[in-house]
Every structure is written in structure tokens, then in C-alpha cells.
Image (tube, rainbow, N blue to C red; front, top):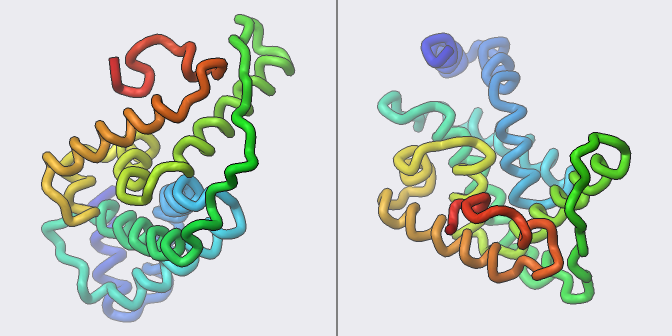
Length: 195
């Protein structure tokens, strides 16, 4: 697929709008997912994804073929989301919110189980939202987009060791902020990558 994407990129650089549309189609899911995980709400994530593709289009000439295309695209998205978070600093964390007190789910996959899973997802999103962008970005790129340490380092302009350090600190902060009564706190060791 990367060869096909590279072909589309070259065609888009020469002004082929259909080729650029195919690139957008290939990356709209991962870009939206990253934006949603970083910003925490759907409308803002949609705006951020659109802005990412606008920036990608205007910067096609800056893409370096030795870089992985997905890392480059997700780098544009993460930098834009970080900028948005900086602009709304102080507004994105509500101190009035109470943490979700989830219980252990039964082995059945009924409505109650689905509701508990939804609450757990919401709780994870709230915990991720509490992280500073410097820790949030590598966590999302690693666990939601399955990027390697090297790919994250490339996307963020860091060393691999700095990425590992930020991921470790992010995991510790998530564990520290997880309420003791939460289903996440009761999860087996290793679930968040920390034992």
C-alpha cells in the first residue's frame, strides 16, 4: 500500500486532485482518531482533521521520501492538535467532574456489559485528556495507532529514548490519576504497560 500512497503523493504534488483525495481517504480514519483522542470531542476533531489535510496539501513539497508517509501525516495532525490545546489551556480540564466509579463487568455481553465498557472507554479518554500534550501525543500514537518508538520519535522530532521516557511518565500519570474504585485500577498488572 505504501507504494500506491507514494504514487498518489507524487501525482498530488503535480496537481492531481483525485490523487490527493485518495490520500485523504487512506488517512482520514487514523487522522480523525488521533485528533479525537487528543482533543476529546467529535466536532473539534473533525475540524482538526480538516485542517490537517489542508496543511498536508499546502506542504506536499516538504515531504521527504525517506520518512514514512503515515508518520508525516500524523505528525501534522498531532502538532495542530497541540496548538489547539495550547490555545484553550485552562479550559480543557474541569475540576468539577467526578471520576466514573465503574464496577467489574460480568462475563456476559449484555446491555450492562456494553454500558460498563462504554464507561471504561470514557474514563480512559478523561484520563488521557488530563495528560499534558507532551505525554498525550506519544501515548496515543503508541497505543491507538501502534507506531513504533522510532516512528513516534520521527513524528515528534524527539529521540527514541525521549519517547520511551515520555511514555513511561504518561503511564505513571494515568495510573496515579486512576481512582481506586475504578475498573481500570482493578485491571491486571501490565494492562497499561506498567507492572
